Length: 119
Image 1 (cartoon, rainbow, N blue to C red):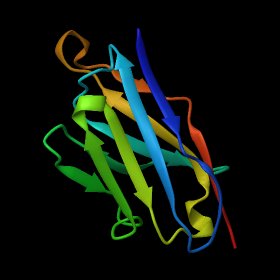
Image 2 (cartoon, rainbow, N blue to C red):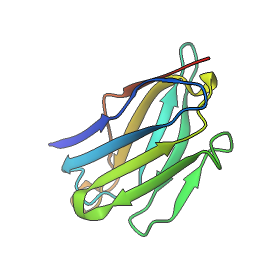
Image 3 (cartoon, rainbow, N blue to C red):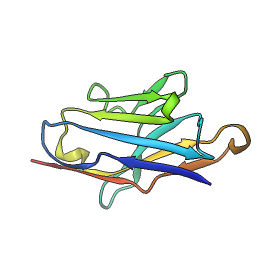
């Protein structure tokens, strides 16, 4: 069984910061890409950032320069540091982990964590 568990969401004022964590376990351990999508009310789920075991990463254009994704392979945990938050960043943030080895080809999702940025 795979588990992907997010934490760190909450309410913050515009201009503030939050750090999200995503821990992968079970069949999601030693995942290849681990990343984040977000879904605002009434909108599609959109890519935010991802990171490979090597540390190579990618960001959506609207978070570049404000969000930083890092990874601790020993802990199978990814962090998303979010700075200079705006109300437009309000969304449910979902972490995913792409399986490796015999789990290759599978994508495991967390339950999501709410981020609310007040103006």
